[in-house]
Length: 169
Image 1 (cartoon, rainbow, N blue to C red):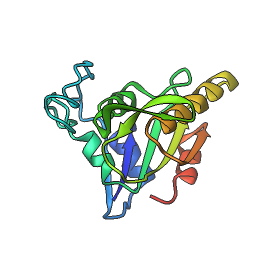
Image 2 (image 1 turned 135 degrees about the vertical axis):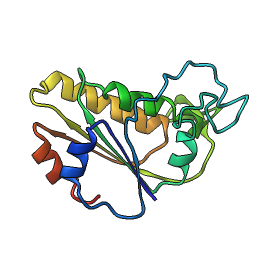
Image 3 (image 1 turned 90 degrees about the vertical axis):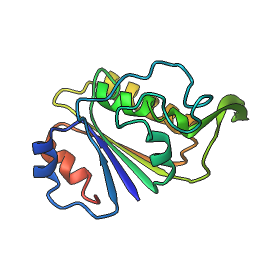
C-alpha cells in the first residue's frame, strides 16, 4: 500500500490526479483532525493508536503498512501546512517510547519494522531560498526520526508543476 497525505482541496486533488491506483490510501483534511495533545497515550494507554478518536487515530499503524508515503504540502515558512503537520504529529505511535542511539544521536525505536520510502512535494508561489533550506532540513530530520533511508524532496511554484513532479501516483 502507498499513502498520500495532502492539503489540497478535493477539487484540486481530483483535477490533478483524476486516476489513482487501487493500492493508494489518501489522507486529506476532513475538517475533523484534532491536534496531538502530547499525552503519550499512543505509547502507554493504547499502544500504537492515538487516544483521540477523530478518524486520524491510526496514522502510525497505517504508515506501518505502507511501502511509500507521499506528502503534498503547501510550504509554510519552510514547514508543512498545519494539516500535514497534524497528521505527522499524530503518526508518532509509529515509534516506541524507548530510545536507541543512531549516528551518535538519541532516537526512538521503531514499533514496526517496515522500511518505507518518503516523498515530500512542497508547493507555493514564492518559496524563498531560506524556506527551501529550512524545509529540506525538516524533512531530513523527519527521516532520521522515522528511520527512513530513501526519500525525495521537491519544490513546485504551481500546481501544474506539482503534477509533473508527482506523476507516479
